[in-house]
Amino acid sequence: MKTMRWTRDRKRRLLWCLAILVVVVALAGGFTWYKFFREEAQAAETDPDVRFKYGSIGAERDAGMPYWIFYVLPRMFPEKLPGPGGYAAFGLGWEEGAELPIGFTQKVVGFPRVANNCASCHTARYRRSPEENPTFVAAGPGHTLHLAALFRFFVDCAKDPRFDADHLMREVQLVTRLSWIDRMIYRFVLIPLTRKRLLEREGQFAWIYRKDFPDWGRGRDDAMNLTKYFMLKLPMDNSFGPTDIPAIWNLKKYDREGTTMNWAGDSHDAHSVIIDSALGLLGAAPKRKAEFLEEVKWLQRYLREKEPPKFPFPIDDKLAVKGKDVFDAHCASCHASDRTGKRMPLTAVATDGERVATWGKDNAVAANKVVRSFGIERKGLVEAPLDGYNPPFLDGLWLRAPYLHNGSVPTLRDLLTPAGERPPVFWRGYDLYDPVKVGFVSDGAEARRVGTKYETNARAGNSRGHEFGTTLPPPAKDALIEYLKTL
Image 1 (cartoon, one colour):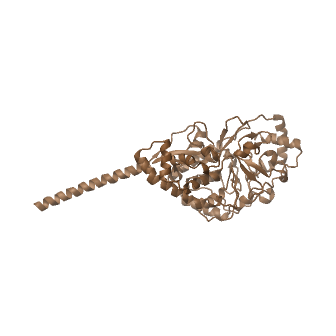
Image 2 (image 1 turned 45 degrees about the horizontal axis):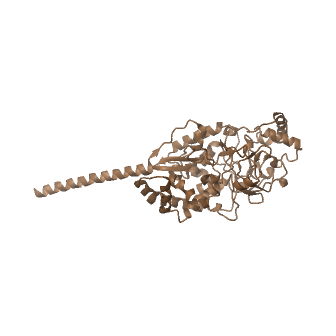
Image 3 (image 1 turned 180 degrees about the horizontal axis):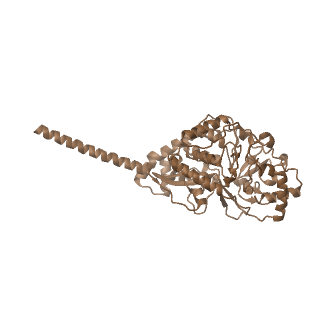
């Protein structure tokens, strides 16, 4: 009897222990899910421009940074910024009253995380006078953005010995009060993990640190090398081809049969470009493919119908009419014809060829294979050798300065001068507009203070070529420029 009672008691104790264990495991699992993986949807946004500028594309899950680490880094490491002003020093747009710069998103995935979306590179800004606040233009070229400096900033912060729990938590505690549990999570999980992931990027960004390569400067990125080193994880080669960040408004213009996208015509269509760009921001396969593809569809609809901005200064309509005749005679065959958006051999346009050399057929085949492995179908990247550049459509041309694919010519008036007479040195990234030259002010004390120096004798920076229209008489050039303001 005693043995039976002991056996029953033992079984009862075991059952209690198992029950307690199940409860503990369930509580631990629930805690882990709640603190690290639960997702809270962003508030629905009816304004499409606001959604474009601040809406999540899902990058927070794999590429997001804990909000409070993101918040305090400029305060902790101001010496690593390109100038004063926190994140604004990188040329990011920051609207009055906004919590984050344009193109940065906040979403709770367990904890508040910050990531970026397409608007971080594709938002333009201009001022008509020094006293005016900037006007931000969604889907425009981010000509003020110093992307290479932003990449380096995060890596350089992680390499600093002060990037540890003691220093970061001391700074975080100055700006917010976290609960004891959240302080422990930041101290023992989020800070070490964030540092580890940022340091892993150092190798992928190695070519940005090379002393034998010039800095990209403001408004440019080396897009195809980013694809090679991030998506394909290829070893660094000697190619170098920074180009102007493009405008992405009015994408319906690419509906025409046979057009390709990007400067060198390396992608078949807008759908493919948006997918590839979004995957680059995610840094991994999308966790929720259907949700990701829905966001891609929304972006494509929005960008397809997004109109280019109107020139914000008076236009001489009579002179512009004369300029239309000049345009039709000297420019339309490339920029308003069946040739527009279709690759032109490099020998024909004779501009700098470094961008073409950064990408090849084998790279396209490999990248398309990676995207297919994610279960995503698209026309994709062009699996053919690249031998030139696409003559671009000219919608919103006035806001797309500096000009040529590498941004080596500051204004339209400079572009209509022979290559040997174009500015050999100027400063990129100032947002004060010059309506006479049609471009941004690119010299002077303030332009030098705000911008980055551009030298056309540097690698991938040559301003040669595209000498079309340079021999026109001055009255014809004036008329042509007046017409180009209307596009």
